[in-house]
Amino acid sequence: MLLQEQSIAPKSLFFILILLATSNTTAYTSPHSRRSTYISTYSRRSETASTIIRMSSKTEQSSSSSDTKSASASKTVTKMKSNNVRWAIRGIAGELWHNVFIRQIRRARSFLGTRKQKRVGLPRKNETAVVTGATGGIGSKMAHELAFRGYDVIIAARNAELGQKLVLDIQRQLENSNSTTEGATPKPTISFMEYHADRHLSALDLASNLTVLNESSPVTCLINNAGIMGKSEQLSMRVNLLGPVTLTLALLPMLMKNCNKESSVVKIINVSSSAHLRATGVFDQENLSSSSKSLMNIFPDTPDEDLSTYAKSKLALLQFSTLLRHTLLPKNKGLQVLDAHPGLVWTPLLRTHIGDKATNTLKKTGLAGLIYKSPTEGSQALLAALDHPAGTSEEQLYFVNGQPGGYASPESRDLQQSQQLLDRLIAPELEGIVQLPDGW
Image (tube, rainbow, N blue to C red; front, side, top):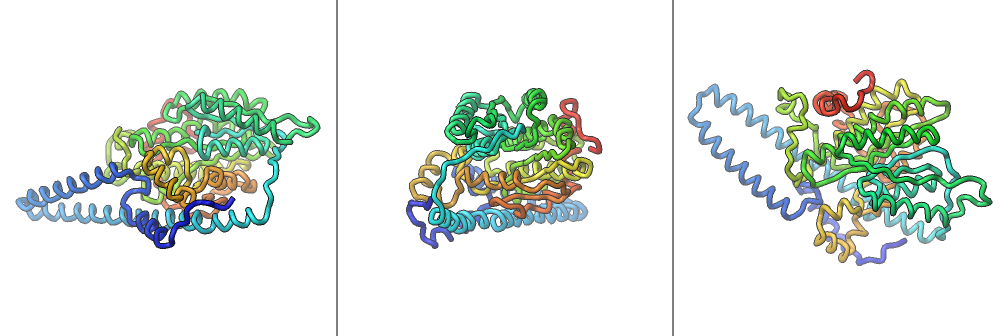
């Protein structure tokens, strides 16, 4: 349906784009976060000035060494700024262009060319799809869509009350559809299973329950959708990276068995973000030279106010996909590992992060409906990955705006960085919890 909201002048849109493109943080940083950034920047400048004064009394050799370090630091800062530019141009600008212009054209064509028809559900496939973080936003819409495509759906999330409510809502919609005319086939089964992405044991419990279910309805689709933003840096890495990694690896023996059955295709879809373009790596050289077995300790238990750790966690998830494709796909013909970026989407996760004041302002001005996709529209990238033709490929397939070929950073498919992620974070953190695949 066409937007019936306040029109936005081109000048205003240009201002919004420039604001997003020139920000050293993400578009979702709160005023409090920016104030903290300014204070932090001032502190760093003061420390640098003090360091220069102290350095003036050192020897020429020490000065030479310091110059080298300063040059290295300068190079790092320059690289960081260029990454923000990369993210703004290849990520945010493209998403705004699509949302503000391309999407409106498509909406107009749809509104003018078709009449809304009653939705029809497909017969039960006797296959199970698992969606994590499915009680709101994009995950909720995916659960609906999977059910109407005939999948038995497992809603894996923290909130049991919201989960059961979603189960009833999907069941009611299936009942209202004419999916089982003449009683020919049964409707899909919709279930809720509790899952906490920041707890290893929760992932193992979920995997155990799914293994039992797999005997009657094979699991052929895993969508790692659960995620957080703006929480503590360490929690962000645990939920956005280690959560999906633990669940995927716990399910992997079963998924590989399923995909090697005749005519069976198993899809693992990892939900990423264009924010990954801000990060050139999960670790820097100083981190890698640390003697610590696990580098999880480089992520403090302090708020990820500028979402830089969120960006790293999304890059890391893409690198996990790279590891899976590189080591598993040549031996497992029916397995697909795909990456999807929903885009700028008006979700509960976003609204919680930006706060009530910003949320209300965006609603009142009409910007929410203009700049951001709806969760249904955001789910199109995931559905495109789901519908991608069977066949394995070690090449990265990154789905954006309902089709493959979106821009993912070179670092996201860098095998050396992916191996470092495995050796210095994934393997140490999951030692004794899940078994790593052969070759890892």
